[in-house]
Length: 272
Image (cartoon, rainbow, N blue to C red):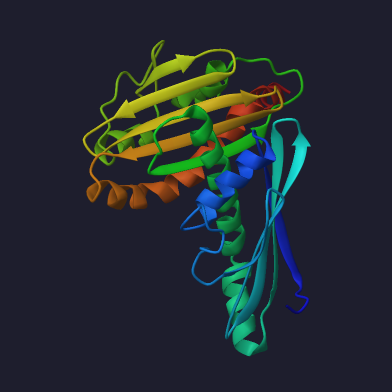
């Protein structure tokens, strides 16, 4: 295939070895994880070299493109997954298409979402939990010396909005969750605290449409991750409701984990 112009690269660190991360990548990217050729519509398999490199290519009248995932061993039990894109957009229609796909940030958002799905697939496999109908993971670096337990980080992230504000209203009246007190020793944003230790807090709630889990974890004292899992009870109604709420969640969740990780720094700046 011809040499194509470089577009961008995005990456995420996964808490698993390369073999397990490769398996998660195939579960996310292939209709049949046992057959790497069963890639998404619009692509064909260009290369599958386990557990190192997974490359896709494709073309249509407005673009020629290549999407490559590379798995690098960062340390024992940790893998850095890099997703790199090359593409050409021939002709005036190609330039318009490029502005729509690349210029709007849509391609970058899809790539980051795909990487987070791979990380979430690893977590699901490691936990042995039943596969969720929706999973995402967001992360943020923890400042050096920050030893706050996970629950304190979550409470700090909520700040004066520990009751959840509009989020709590959406959880109760749109998602239909049965919520407890907005904030108490056993609840946050109305969700029950199912587990809380130094490195992890897990919140859980349920309702007629679906049940949800929110997990904030400290990873090696260097990063914090926020994982959301949604399990549908109503297989028709629940996906429709989540399709409405999901985009808002994907705006709020990364901001929440950023505030959780940076609360001490923000407090210092405020008092300074």
